[in-house]
Image 1 (tube, rainbow, N blue to C red):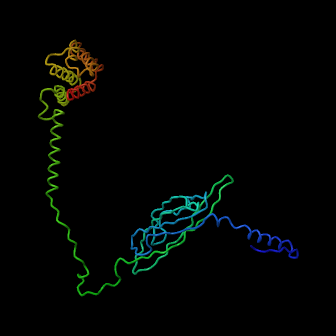
Image 2: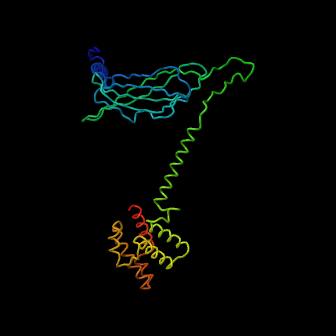
Length: 321
């Protein structure tokens, strides 16, 4: 505490200066109490080589209510010509004394090409903490101090002199010999499983040699439509699509199926009941095309893409039935 005895002889300026000194001694600056301390911790301070990652933790203790201003953190990037800041992570907690503890986990990377073991300075940086209240916000600056790391060379500067330059080279390391038989056996097993899966898929989809087996008349009708598409077009192609549908229904039921026979067909084959609407439209279009000689009208009522889609649906039903 400063002792000040006012004197009226020094005039107004002297009295004002004395009052300022008195107040400065009686009231400590609040910023000194807001940041209680900064402590650095590193796994080790020596033995780093070119390219190594250097970890350091800065622990800042501040008064309760003070939190970190994240924009004040250093940005990852070059720090010096030999050092880069790679990553900055933060976490906050409560200390045993009630203070707010802010931990900065910093990751640097060393690019210094050392010719001998030496100590290098890592620069410090300021960090701002802030406390927000009803009357506004209060900020304080915590200075993270500079610290040192020891770096070492990757090789000796002057190796032992040798007469034959080839003696500076070291022989290649011996790699273990790998047996290719297990890998070949695994590949052969996977190939066999893939071939079996392909055969099963061909059987399910009625491909290749399985296309003509019994029980898949709609799959055969769809193939007949694809062959007709390569040979004809227009009304001829449309009539071929209608005939393919007729042949699929006939082969499925084992008899000729006409429009009036559709309810009995669905009764004998209940799996196709979900396609009753499409089959009814098909029979109406077939009657227009073959008996009413109105192929254009039939195509408008039941277009060719819809006929092919009906064949696909019927084929899917017969596969799952």
